[in-house]
Image (tube, rainbow, N blue to C red; front, side, top):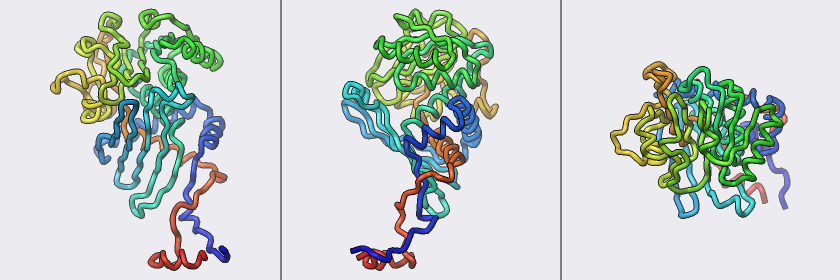
Length: 349
C-alpha cells in the first residue's frame, strides 16, 4: 500500500506538449503566424550556426524505413528528436513520419520540455523551406509547383504564402486522391490550388518547385529538361541514403545549398554526384558569408534533408508558447536527499 508519498518538486515535473496541446497552440496562435514565427526562429539559430554542436543524425535503416536520433546543443540548451520514416505506413493507415523530442538545460541536464514532434516536424520543415526560398528564389516568385501532396504538402504551401508571398499552387501526386485532398484543403485556406495530371503540367509557369515525395528509393521526380531558367527548387523528399528525387543532370545546372554538408552528402540529392560537387551551407548565405542567387536566370536548389538545429529552434519556440495549463509529467526521480534514491523507493511501500 502506498501512502504519505512526497509530491515531486516543480523542477521535477516536466512540461509535456501532446498532439492535442500542439493543435490547440496552433489554433490559439494561428497556423500561418506560427509558421512565420518559426521561420524567424530558425533563421536566428542558423545565424548562430558556429556555436552549435553538429553531427549527422544517428540512423537505424531497414529495407522498409528508418529510425533516427537528431541531437544538438548550443552550450546552454540541448535538444534531440526521435523520428521515423516508413513510406509503407500509409497502406496500414499509419503516418509515414512520427516524432517526439526533448529540450533540456545543459547546466543541470534536466529536461525543460517533452513534446510530440510529428506536427512540429511538419511545421519546422515547411518553415525551413520558406526560409530557403526567401533567401534564394527570385523576389517576384508567386507560383509554386508542389510535387508530392501527402502529409507535408499543405504546410509547405502555407509557409511559402505566409513568408514568401506565393499565391498559386500547382499540385501533382502519383495518387490522385492525395492531390484532391491537398487542393481541397488549400482552397479552404484561401489559396488558388490547381490540380494537375502530371509533374510536367504542374511545373508549367512555376517560379518555385517543391518536391516532397515519400518513396524510399532513387526516383526521378524532376528530369533535367523539365526545369527552366530562374527556378528555385526545394528538394525535401530525399532524406536518407538511396532516396532521391532529382535527375543527376539537373544538379549539374543548379547552384546547390544545403543545411549541414556532411549529412547531406550521405542523405540528400548530392549523394548522386562526386564528392567535389560544390555546395554552400544555407547559414552562410543568411549571415552574408556566401552569395545566394546571383542572377535572375540561375537555377537555385535547396537540398533539404532536415537538421537538428531546426528541431532545436522549433522546440525552443514551442517552449516559449507554453500555456500555464500545459500538462506536466513526473519523469524525474526527486528524493528529499538527492543521494538517497534507494530510500525514496523504500518509503513508497
